[in-house]
Each structure stands twice: as structure tokens, then as C-alpha cells.
Length: 401
Image (tube, rainbow, N blue to C red; front, side, top):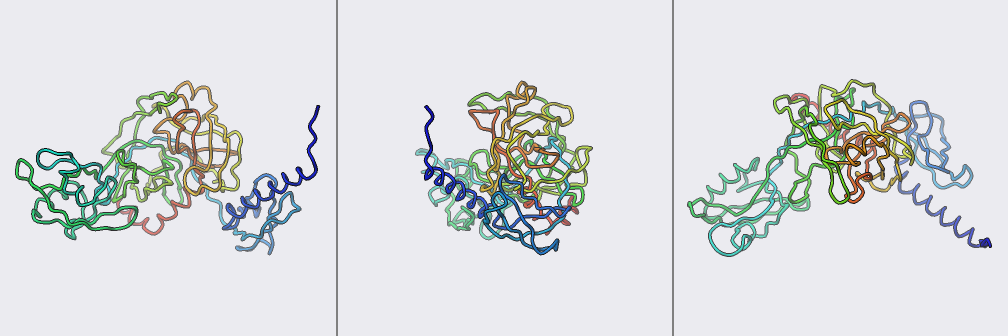
């Protein structure tokens, strides 16, 4: 026997759907929509239409309607040249030097007791993840320099450090170890190296983008503050297949003596910098705006051997326009060949570009540890917007490269 749905219930469902769609419009389209090179609105979300007003001027407006009937909102409509980017999917080696040194742990200075109790820095209030930027007013650029300045300040060292984006100071009295060397009892890190995947190359601006997420300290999980960085060619030499609860990994080797680019930004949206060389031979394709990305079939470009990047099929399961950083999509690897080789998404694959309808829509960022065939991805537009910050100092990066 079929259950009847009452008319009030239908109205309630319709009202809930309307509220949800209004919330989507207010949050996702709060800055307006784009009009592409052909003069058409980029909005493609199901059920929504955009009626552009004031002709095709540089800045106009658009009435957003549900099913072309129910008015939801009037937004700004900006016509701009759609970016055309070269999707890469190629591995690269990265080397970062931090801006200051990041505290990773505390160590003993002297005998007896615990590490923290015998660490002058720990007793002064420093914590793992703090970034030491100055000692007695002198800027810190390496762990070696930190040790040298502490050794010169046996009575008191004034430490400036960053925590949660705010600067703090602490007066620390160093203590002598068994060899008579004065220390403050901290383990610090001033550099890191690894392998990632390049997402795209912007041939017009000579800018590259990769990873889709920040390079973080392996011990603290904090974003490494970038002082300077460089990229070098890399070759994939091994694959550790991912399994439920055990993330897989791409292993490779770096050609350390061949610098191909300079890193200018390390942020939640990825690594960005300048390079005069594109690592792949391919034509640029249009970038999709966030509102154009939709659930459905797509493919990624990635490298899991010493061969050039290959296409592998995926499914975009859902799209989250509310996340402004790097978890805008949930994706699933459906390609049998890739599943056989890697088990799904593995470490080192972050940054692999996602192509849908011949447009660059995003990049792989994270794997679900218990479901390695699934993971998160970032919108290409979010990465492109972050890369635009390079314009203010791109000449300095060009000169360095």
C-alpha cells in the first residue's frame, strides 16, 4: 500500500528546498558571478538561472532565479577574461627554508627530571609549533644562528616568537650543558624537502601552482612559514599502495642541482611561485569557475611511475562551495588501473589536476585514510585567486629564478 504525502508536507519540503537554495546563493554568490569571454554567465548550478542586466558592460548585474521563475537575489556580474591554464600532473621536488625556526619539541639541559622541567624555553612558556623569529632583536634565519645567539647570551635571551599569528616575547635564562654550552632546550626545524604534484602552469604570467594544500611541519602540523623555497625536477621511483587505515605514498628522487622555479607562497591552498619552464608539453585549457563545477564524471592527470602524466577516471561525488580553502569537492577514484597501482589516492598525489568537460576544475588535496579510493579536492579558482598574490612581487621571484 502506497503512503500518501499530504499537501502541507509537500509545501514543507518545497519551503526547505527553497531555503537551502537561498542559503547557497547568499553564501556562494555573495561576491557575484562571472560572465565568460562569450558574454554568457558561468552559473550552472541545477535549477538556477542568471538573467544579466545592463547589457554586456564590464560590470553589470544579474537576477538569480530558481527554475527561471522564483527570484532569489540580484548580484554583481563581472565580465573578465577566463584564464587558460596548462594542466600538469607532473611530480616536482620542493625545498623550503622557513621564516624563523619552528619549535618541534623540548630537550633536557642538565641532568635529572623530565625534558620539559629542564627546558628553559619550556619553563618560559614556549610551546611546540611556536615560530622563533628573533633573539635579542636579531632576525633568525636558521637553527645554527639560533644556537650561536643563545651561546652569546648566557645571562638572558629575549626571544620573539609567533603563535596563532600573533607576536610574543619571552625572557629566557639559558643553562649550561655538560660541555659548558649554553642552551634553551628546544628542538627546532628550519627547512624541509619533499615531493608533490604540479597542478597547472600559467604560461602568460610564468606562474605555477601545486599541492592544493600547505606544506606543514611533520611534528606539529603547523603551516611552515616560508622564507624562501625552490622547486627541482623529480622522478617517481616507487609506489606504496594505500589500504584502509594505512595511507599509500609515492616515493621518488630529486634532481637537487637543477632549480626550475622559486616558491613565493606556502598557504592552505597550495604552493605557488615563478618558473620560466613548463614541465609538460600540452595546450592550455579554460579554468572552471567554482559555480561551474558539478558532481559527475571527470578525470585526473597524475604520475605514478617514471612515465609522463596519465589520465585516470574519477567521480566528483559532491561539491561544497561553502569551504573557502581546500575541501571543495569529495572525489572517488573509479579507474581500475589506478586502483590496482595505488589503491586510490596516495601521498605525493596532492595537486593532481582534475579535468571536467575539458575545463580545469580543481586538484586533489587529501585522502580519506579509511577509504583510500576517496578524498577531497580544491577548486581551481581558489588556487588561481591565491596565485594572483604573486603579482606584487613576481619580479623579485623572476630575478631570483
